[in-house]
Length: 349
Ligand code: TXA
Ligand code: MG
Image (cartoon, rainbow, N blue to C red):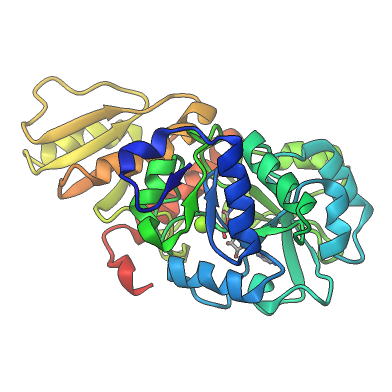
């Protein structure tokens, strides 16, 4: 844990029992507590307290009609927040929770509009990180609602945080406390499945793949248009800007990468490449950074790498397009959005 007022270097101290107790007290008092999950850090507030949830939107600069995920200590708690829960939800929860899966279900009528964005559904997940689970269990045991609303702990439209120091950079003193659980092992946000209508639908790809979900559900999952064929690159105009660095970001096919770098003739740039090393004669001013070549390691590093590359002060980032295939589809999704939103002034969004 770190107090927001402390220096970023102290953000690396691991949380203690006393930190956990303080985090629970702050949540109960309607304050914001950032916490680690296995995917990315969340910006937590008591999900039953509309005024506390409103603080999340103010801290992030996020539009009020965007719903937030509610984190729960166990699957049984689903019933407090959702109704008409289909058998598929229990099956997925049994198999994948605690873990990086969010289920969209019909909400209980008492759930604050601030959480659901005024929709008749609510997003629920039991996270797999031990510190997140400890926090959620302690919060429920202390007589809390048992639900912690938690979007990713970044400013709206920006890169999600995968370490406590990233939360400190993003939100600083806008958050009462940051619980430090080290680096997030997965590194990209949860897979989101909508079970609120007859047909299960994938809303956001993540670490858990469609084929894994279908194997458990025994029925097909409807995929968003851009994911039907994971090998087809996304049209950037169709993407909402998100997960974006400030520096202009371009995705470049492996075969074109080296030529593209040499063609730019020494313009200050950074390259993030998974398949090849720097070409002979790399112009001065070009930073060549190697990316992992397996999807899990790539996802783990992705946001921290984007943050680091963004901090180099170069004119543009060239990212080598990752390999095709469903194991990479969540990474394609995030990079496509990052490319779409990069270079724009996110302070307005
Ligand atoms: O891995 C994650 O899911 C992380 C960690 C902190 O749990 N959280 C996260 O939250 O990524 P956020 O708010 O950054 O993204 C959640 C997404 C948003 O796009 C939101 O619109 C969608 O989930 N969402 C939440 N509730 C929803 C609902 N009721 N219906 C449709 N979409 C919903
Ligand atoms: Mg987010």
